[in-house]
Each structure stands twice: as C-alpha cells, then as structure tokens.
Length: 234
Length: 182
Figure 1: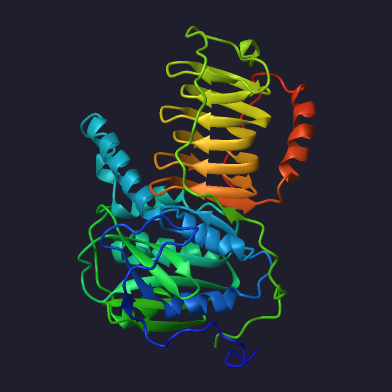
Figure 2 (figure 1 turned 45 degrees about the horizontal axis):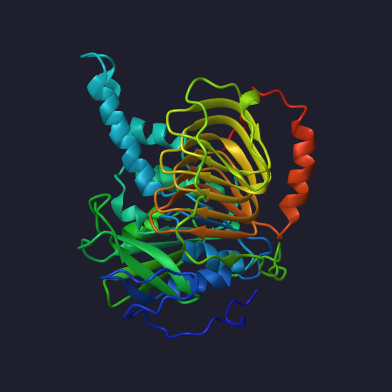
C-alpha cells in the first residue's frame, strides 16, 4: 500500500508547544504547569491503526479518562498498565523483602537482571499479538539497562504484525516528571506529576534505532521542546 | 515503509462509549451490618432501593448478591452480583472479586473484573486490577487501573446479569474467584 496516498489527519508538520487547551467534556480542568504539544507522532500512530477493526491499544502510562475516551470513541479497546509505577513498586517491595530477610540468605543472587526477569513474570502478561498499538510515552528514558531490552522484547511479542509503538525521548535530562494524555488526534497534554523515577538517560538517535532494531521501520519527530517522538512499526 | 497489510483493515466500529462528568460518588447513608464474622449466606439486603454496607473491619468470603445498593468499606473475597443496583467500594474497601452491577463506583482497591450495565466510575483513590466492561466509564485523575476497558451497548450487561443471577443460585458460596488477568 502506498502510505503517501492515504488521507492523513490534518495538522502542522512541526511539533510545537502551545498553551493548555480548554478542557473538553472528557478532560478535567488543566492543572498548573500542564502544556499541550502538537504530536505528529500521535497523528502518524493514529493513521497506522486507523483502518483496524476492533483494534486494541495498550497504554503504558497512567490511566487517563481523556486518552481512554479518545480511543474508545474511535472503536478501539484499550488496556492500561501504569508500567513505571508498577516497576517502582516492585523494586520497593523487593527492597523491603531483602531488608526483612535473614542475613546472608540468597542476597548475593539478586541482580538487576534477575529483578527485571522477575518483574516481567507478572507484568505485560498478554497473549502474543494482542495489540495493534502501544503508547509507551517516555518510559524508556527511565528504565535501567537490564529492564529495557526485556521490555522491548516483550512489547514486540505483544504487538500484532504491523502493530506500532509510539515512544517519546527527551533530548536532554527531563526537568520535571510528566504524565501524558491524548487531547485530540494531533495533540498530547503533558501533566506535571510527582517524580516517580529519576530520568536515567538521554538516548542518542542511533541508540533509539538500535533499541527498536527488531522493528521494520521507524520515524522520528523532533520538537522544539526537547522531546523527540518515535514511531516504530513491527 | 509504513505500508499496511490488507489484514483487518475494515472501517472502525461506531463509537459506543461516552464520558461521564467527574462527580464525587454519592452514597446513601449506609446501614451497618454486624461486625462479627459473617457467612456469605447471612448477607441480605433490605427492600429494593435501600442500601447495605459491609463496613470497615468486616471480612466476607463468598458470593454476595441482592437487589438494593451495596457499599463496601470492608474486605470481600468471592463474587458480588447486584445486577439492578449500584455497588460502591469505599476508600477502605478491599475487594478480591468480580463485581456485576448496574452502576459501579470504586474508591478503594479491587482485584477483579467489573461489569456494569450502565457505568463504572473509578475515583481518584481507586486501584483496580481487572477488566472493565461497561457502556460508560469515568476515571478521575489519580485512579490506577491495570487491565482492559471494553465498552458495551447500554443494557447489554443487564440481560447478561439477569442470566447470571439465575445461574449464580447454583454456585456454592465459597466458589473460587476467577483469575483477574486478561
């Protein structure tokens, strides 16, 4: 199929920050510090899944009424899993467990790799090919080196053939921790939130491509607000 | 690049879901049930329309069903079927059960699937692990959901709930809870 021939969603070609939008019926009043950015990545993501009947979306950010409503009204089924929060809670629980364990008992066997494996035994547990799209937001900026490739492998497995992932990457260390929600077909709202995790790394473009090396193709959109959007097609 | 396969590329379905305005859940003044250990069979509800409460400190294992509204601020394990009524899980409520009702409001913790004939509302302090099946869903900021959201046509689950209630009479009170993962 010639993807250039397919009608696109409208909008500008560059990602720009703009003032918070008026809350629609599906959103609550904008909190101080929120901003709405034009998202060409989202626009492309929607275009890629636009013809899928009964498509399924996995949102790995904080559950949001606006995002849910947006996709449900378009006929998609949405699964949500606040992945970063789950990971942090898992680490806290493991730390607590280790603290309570008798001295010397299996403590030397714990490594980041083992923790990542153990975490994924209970997270992202869906059948293969379940989703036509995954909203990963900026999660990868916060993962450690052991968790990242394992999550990537799992996401690849969970994606339907020709499914796509929308991910965001900061071009410099994030000053604030944000949550994201979809405002409309070409806008994403950034919501300042209590810091859940420390920004772990700034990806270079080559590292992003390597991370998504299994994927068939990719597109990157660079915004003026130091946020890059990546769209990766299985 | 970016080419789409022909598979599954039909037009999307017409939307069924509508968003609810965020409103603080209103719960009728609850009647308090006994604080001593109670078996599931002892849980009864008053006249239709009235509400019952499983208050904080009360722990129930088994199947709970009825016609009045139910407010849960204690712990419930098993299943909750109030097909024609409203079920509210209060901020202290901890439910490990599937919930079926006309309207479901969650402020506490639920591990189980939620099926509502009219709407599901997740409050800002809610923590739900399980699927939502409902025509309308409202999620306040701060709510936590791990699971899928499926919208149904209004009334679709009412018919299902009626059938389910007829069936549930045959289920022992200690029937195990269905796994909540997708």
